[in-house]
Length: 298
Image (cartoon, helix red, strand yellow):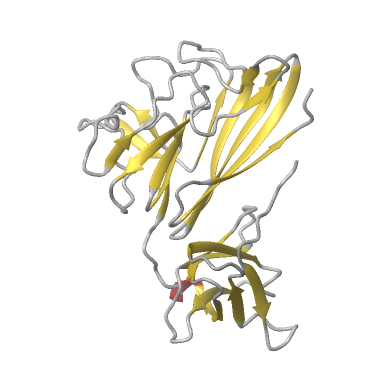
C-alpha cells in the first residue's frame, strides 16, 4: 500500500511536562492561502492521555470551544483520536488550549457530517444499521429491494455520496442546496418503503450523477493490459463476484464520520483478493477521503 500525504498545515503539540497530558496545540499555516475548515487529527499517544475517564476538548484563547470529537477507531472501547476543524488565515500561527473533561460534560456541537445506512427489516419498516453483511448468492434484485439508498450514504454540510452495496459497488453523488443533514429521510416513500425519491430536484437538492453500470465517483477496478476489471456486477446479476461484503460505521460526529467496507475473496482472474476501504468525510469539504488496502494482487 502506498499513501501520499500533502502537508498543508503543520501541527505542534505542546505541554508543560512530558509526563502530563498536553495542554495546548500550535497550528501553523505555511502557505499564503486561507485554509477554511482545515481538518486535524491527533492520536491518544500524541496527546499523552492519562487514564480513561477524561477526554480532550479544544478551546480558543477566549475560552470558546472549537468543534471537535474523540473517536474509537479500533473499536476496543477506548478513544484513539481527537478530530477537529479550524480555519487558518494565510501564514497564520495560532495557539489553542486543550482541556480534559468528563464525557458527561463534553459540549454538543453542530452536526456537520452524517452516515445513513437504511435497510428494510420488515414490510414498510426501514431501520438504520451500523453494520451489515451480504454473501455471494441471492443479491437483492426483487420488488422488495431492501436498501434505502442502495447502501451506505454519507454527507457533510456541502455534498453527499452513496455506495451501491448490492454488489454493484459503484459510487453516486448528491448535490446539496442546504447545509443541514438530510440523507436520513431521502429515498423513502410516505408508506415507509424504499424508493427513488432523489433524482428529482427538491428543496434539499438531488442525485446529480447517472451511474448506471459505470464506476461512478469512486468505484474500484484493476487495470489489466487492455481493459479494466471492475469490482462489481451489473444490476441484472444475482450472483456476486465477491464471496462476502461487510459494512461497518467506525465513527460519526459533528466534524467527521468514518465507515469501513470489507470485501472478502474478490475473484480476480482466478485469484481471490480481499479489499478493505476506509471512507472519511470531514465537515466543510467538497469531497471525501479514502484509504484502500488489498491482499496480494495477481
